[in-house]
Image (tube, rainbow, N blue to C red):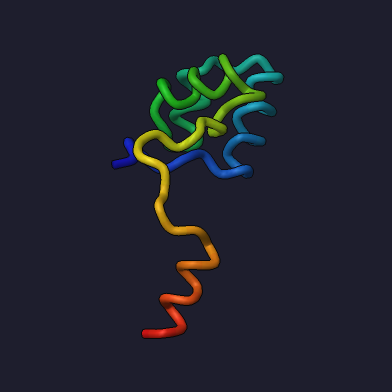
Length: 73
């Protein structure tokens, strides 16, 4: 289960712009309505934020198999 909703592109832009203006991470978090932990995680890893691959067992059915099953039902 996901831990929370990911930052939108708009929120990422807001965080970057406010941080460049010299505003503290805690103040940025209160302005955009997110936790300071989310803001810190984003600013510490801007390039790779939200790019983690799926964990767990790989899917068994291919996209083609899934389409053919949905057509049959």
